[in-house]
Image (cartoon, rainbow, N blue to C red):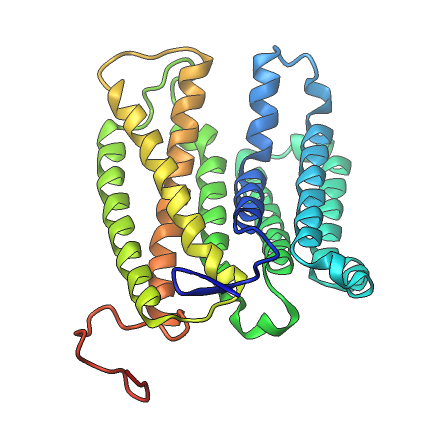
Amino acid sequence: MSRIAGLESNTRTPQWIPLLAAFTLVVGFTYSDDIVEFTLDYTGWRFGGARVWLVFALDCVLVLGTLVAKWLMGGANEPGEFRRQVVIGKWGLGAALVVSLHLVLIVTEAPRAGLGKTAALWIALLFTLLFVAAMALLLVSVLSGPSDRPGNNWVLPLVVGVFVAQLVSALWHPVIQIDTRCAIDVASAYFSAVTLMQAIVLLNLGRELSDVRRRGAVLNVGQQILPALTVLMLVVSILLALSMLLKSDTPACGLAAVWHEYIALVFTVQSTTTGLITLLWMMLFYPDAVPSGRRDDETPSGGQR
């Protein structure tokens, strides 16, 4: 067994595989609609009629990617158990939910187009909740083993972050975006404030991880990946926010400028929310973590030096 930052890990699985699987699933499920819409915008909506099918196909690729990651992380050693988990386990339930939701969206596309903005928004939020639940099932299936059931609350920060990002995305057209040609709808003060907030969250995450390293807590894969994924998201988010600040005094119009502003807004909201909830989760639920406020010469109750 090897240790990285005081965390037990399986030497047979490279550490980047679960991190890449989690990042791809979280970001992919959050922005699959946007990836397809950006592609259609770039091509002049030449394939606009197939939009819902393209999103369906992209999400199916993401789901199959989690299956590959699950196999690489140990499924090959127990083929019978792996097949059982695929058919009747959390992965199978999450995959079936993704496919079913997309089929419902495809069948009801025409009736939903005739609804008002308020009704359409509520329906979108309902489907968002269901998609987030499916993503949570897939994450837990890939990053947790059968013995990790009591420790699966690590998925909560990611779930909350994705839902908040989807909420902001749903409000972009009806509430936030005013000028459809120029990136002037989000105040530069927001990106300045969020950069400072994320830097503070990063520092506190580093302090909590240092406590865990010193104590040598033994965590499951999901509990290991959550802080690393949160740090990665915060770093990318800070770069996006800084890129918006660099051009805040320069008028920016056009397709690329609007998409830049949109992605910067949604991703900074998602990463900040995920970071704050992760920090709270680490302080409250991290197994055997040292309380961040205690002195080095103190021993937690019931613990040994």
